[in-house]
Length: 82
Image 1 (cartoon, one colour):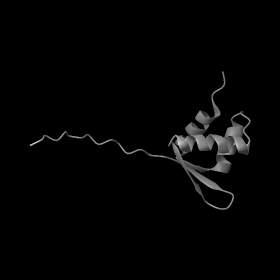
Image 2 (spheres, rainbow, N blue to C red):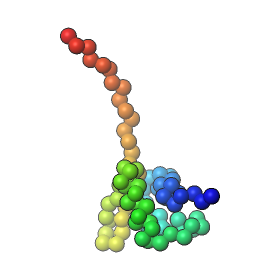
Image 3 (cartoon, rainbow, N blue to C red):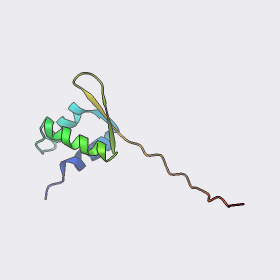
Image 4 (tube, one colour):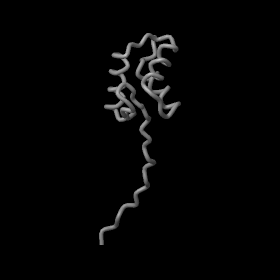
């Protein structure tokens, strides 16, 4: 059974904290899975919709991909009605 490409991409991005789209494409292809730029765009869109990553344009043809750091949830003390 093959490991889904988007999970492999997310794990790689999470390990690096941030990277460019070219670095990600190179890492995915080096890993043995064949990934085209169109497939990578689709999986990046899926990860961004899920709220796991953010994508920013660095230049006309380069994008910076970053992992979304979720803040630790604060412990809420319930209020007592007076």
